[in-house]
Image: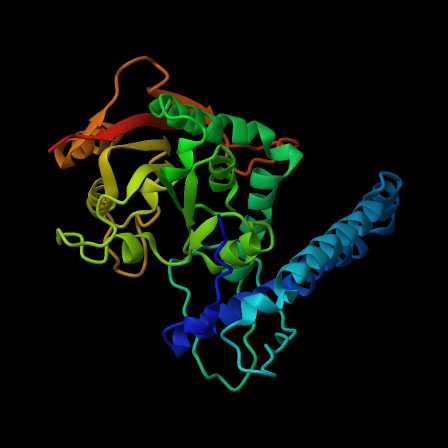
Length: 359
C-alpha cells in the first residue's frame, strides 16, 4: 500500500492555502511561544523576596526551568523536521516561502473556539494564536499516545479491542486474502490504528481533517493510504443519493473517539452505513462528549445519549452484536494522559461491533 503524501497543490482556494500556511507558522512559532511562557516563570521567581528565592533555588527550581527550556527546544527541533519536508509544500509556488511569525506578547488563556479563520492575503506575517498553539500541543501529546513507549497503555486499551474485533469478524479469511478487504479509519489522527490494521494485512485508509495531524502523520507514515478531507465531504458528498461513489465500498469502518465529533450524528451514522459493503462491520470505541455542544459559531449540534445512539444505529440499518461481552461493553481508558501528573480523566468509553443489516 502507498501513503498519500498530501500534495497540497490541489487546494481549492486561497482560504485553504492561507490556513495551511498558518498551520506551518504555528509549527515554527512553537519555540518562541513556549520559551516565552517558561521565561515568565523565571520573571515570577526573581520577583520574590530573596529568602524565598533561596529556598526555591535549594529545591532545584531554577534548574528545573532550565530543563523545561531544553525540552521545549527538543520539541521545537522535532516540529521543525516535520515542516522542513519539501513535499508538504506542493501548493507553494517555486521560491515561495512562509514568513516567520512576528514576535509579540500573547495570552496563555486556553479558551477554545470552533472557529479558526485567518484572512488570506494579509500583508503582515501571521502570528499564531493561543488556539493554534493548543492544537499544536495536542498534536505533540498525540505523538506520545500513538507512537511512544509511554503510550502503550492507552493503545492497548483503545486500539487492541478494535483490532481483536476486526480479526474475529473476519476470522474465516486467510491472511493472504485480507489484502482484498478495505478498512476505513475516520479521524485517524497520527495514524497508529490505521498502521496497525495495515500491518495485519488489510487494505486500510485513514481519514483526517486536521492539518496539524496531517502534517505530523506525513513524517511518520509511508504505507497507509490517507484522505485529507472532512469525513462527510469525502464519504457522504450526497448522503441521500443511491449513486454515492463510496457506497458499499468498505468492508470495515473503525471509529475510535470519533462519532462525537459530529455536528449531526444522524448523518455520520447514515454515511457509515451507506459506504459499508453488505455484511460489513462497524467497530466503535469512544465517549460521547459532543464536541460542538455550546459552540459559538451557530453550527448545529445534536447530542444523544448512548442508548439513543444505539437505537439510532439500529433504525438506520445496523445490527449491534450482543454475542458475548467482547462485542459490546464499556472500556475505561484515558486519552493523551500524563501518567506522572496529579490529574487525569478516565473515559467510560462505549465499545460495540455492529454489522450492516442485509436489505
